[in-house]
Length: 133
Length: 372
Image (tube, helix red, strand yellow):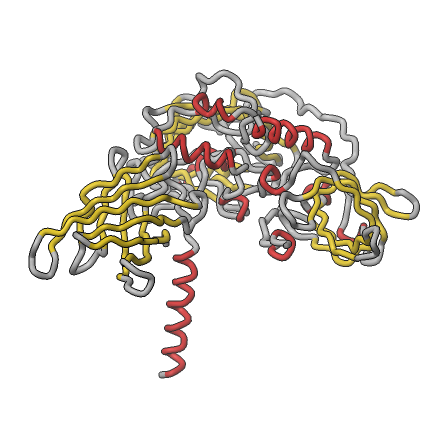
């Protein structure tokens, strides 16, 4: 049983290595991005973006799953690789909550390029950093 | 301007280099052709590994300090074709090297000449070759009249070097670039293809970074038109009884690609697995094999120089053999997410007679490639 569990762990570890090594050489925003945001260095919330380029616009979702938030708009300025992301959701009390993030795409040529910048969620301001998986 | 000068220097450097430059990495990104270096010392190690052969020497500076340098001196495949062996050089041999140093702080150089000391015997230099022109002949044909894309029965041969270094749009004027597909003038980017803004920005970024992030340099497959640009050629194996044509690649880690000629629709099952070579369906239009391919992943650069694409890429390739020794390759690129309209380019490829594709693998020469 332990041996089987070990083999299973090895399988998932190998799969993780393989998946993390996959390149994405198409549109620079396409793919899954993970990281966090928060108002301070210690107060952080996990963040996942999934974005796709359909030839006309970039669509996507923040934190796919039960609490997913559809991205309302993404604007990429290719002259300086800055990106602006906006989305609307509701807070725990059901009130509308607007999300606006502005950042810069760095290390464009890397598989694991990053976006870093500012994150505003309702009245809370913070910073964020996500890395493309 | 600096970019232009860099690229000019790269081109001159490659011309000057004694060893054929056919390895996979981007020389432009690795070596600084504006500088020269002279080294001398005993050999401490030899890595006879594709795609880059290295030896290491201990070099003593004026202050007596010894540092170990890695010297790249070609590709084992080409070196062996030129008659050189791994045991041409031995641990402990003292050599003098004139070469081009790596960019950055790495103690690494690309050798323009290697001389054994004492004695002065020059090593790893390409022999002077007389260019041989294969005899002119009409294209071979199958009994049913179709042109054969491979060798006729009982003969050997494969398709070798392409007439151009990278895919560009047919309507473009001649665009100067080096062997890596690096433009001599970055302002020519607009002439290469009808880019959407993001794609032009990505292409220019790849050019400005001297193609250092090229997936092919990391031994990933050369999908799309680039498969017909890699060193060491390719071959068609036509299997009409099986309804398919195999394309065997010599330079892309001996990859293969299947072109189905059994009448199946374009893109059947392509949505299931996106791949480096896509899903290809071919048909004959007279003496031209027309191949349509979809189902590409986004993990490769489809040509030297770094043209981007997306999963929406649809290629229409046209192969014809106007005579025995010439393959004409034309491709139409249709990727509405990347380019503003479909566009076409192409080149000619020469037949290498009486030889088979040699075994070549891009091996991960990690220790040498990542010298610090």
